[in-house]
Image (tube, rainbow, N blue to C red; front, side, top):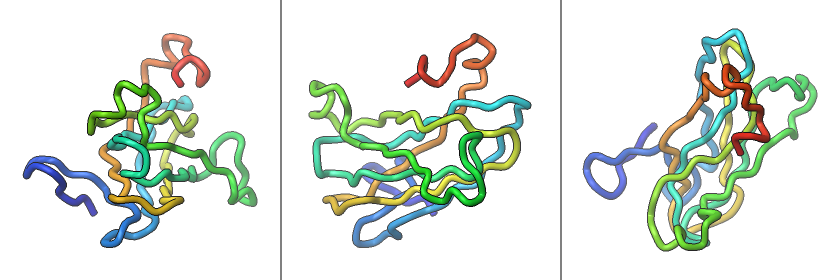
Length: 138
């Protein structure tokens, strides 16, 4: 469930923290016939404000039904030190997602002042068309 934060027009999926679940799952469709790069949009601020998280993706190319430990770490602290003073969104590259129905589960992996705030998912449909692979869009 999306929750309001900050101003009355700002909403995010809250994960972790005192008033939120420690994990959440999101189901979505990749309508393309090709794998698409996936980024998770999260709020970013200085160290310890938001928890780090693990993203589990259902049935990636490099994952089998028995491989339940495959995950991708995301850090809400902005990699640019100058940006860490601002409370802003940032996107974190996760991996390629398969065509069709997908599910991601995001788990908070440490305690923090605030719950992780997920504000969106981004699939780059133009990236494969333009010849960009996963290493080009990190």
